[in-house]
Structures are given as structure tokens and as C-alpha cells.
Image (cartoon, rainbow, N blue to C red; front, side):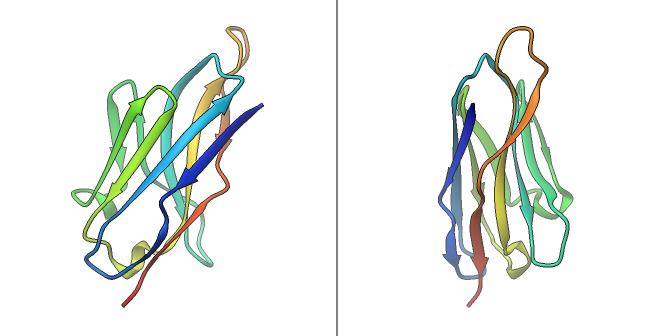
Length: 119
């Protein structure tokens, strides 16, 4: 069993900053990649940022404003700056995890944390 727990969401004014964090725990052999996705009301879930083996990927809409980092093998953070109302969404943490050396890599998700950007 693998669990992802996010923290750090909330209400912030336009132009403000927030930092999201996610910790993965449970039966973990290895984590090859971690990332953040978001889903706004009425829209599909989309990639925000992803990090694996030192390579980072960002959605065009957040480049230059958001920074993803991985402080430890099981922890990923998303520093969000210059937030806009269109960044409002539920943010989900994702991890690609092998639970044993021979198991296939599986995608695991957190429960989501709400980020609201509004004045």
C-alpha cells in the first residue's frame, strides 16, 4: 500500500505565493518520478510540473512562476509564485512507484489540496 499526503493549499490573493508539499509513504521499493497535476471545475486534470532523475517538466502556463523540487526520495514540493485566478484548482500529487524489485511501476495519487487565487 502506498499513500501520498499533500499539504499547503489555501486561499491567496493574485500575485501571492504558496508552497505545496507531498510525502509518499508505505510499501516503496523505488520512486522514479513525482509530480503535480491540477483540475479546475469543469476541466480535465492537467500536468503542472514533474521531476524525475533531475529532469523537470513544466506546463507552459506555469513556466517561470512555479518551481518543483524533490528534497528527499519520497518528498516533492511545488513553490508557486505570482499566482493568478486561473491557477485556482485542486492540486494532486503523483508518484510513479515500484513496490518490489519485480513489480511494475504504478501511478499513485494524493487526495488533492485546494488552491484558490482570489481577491
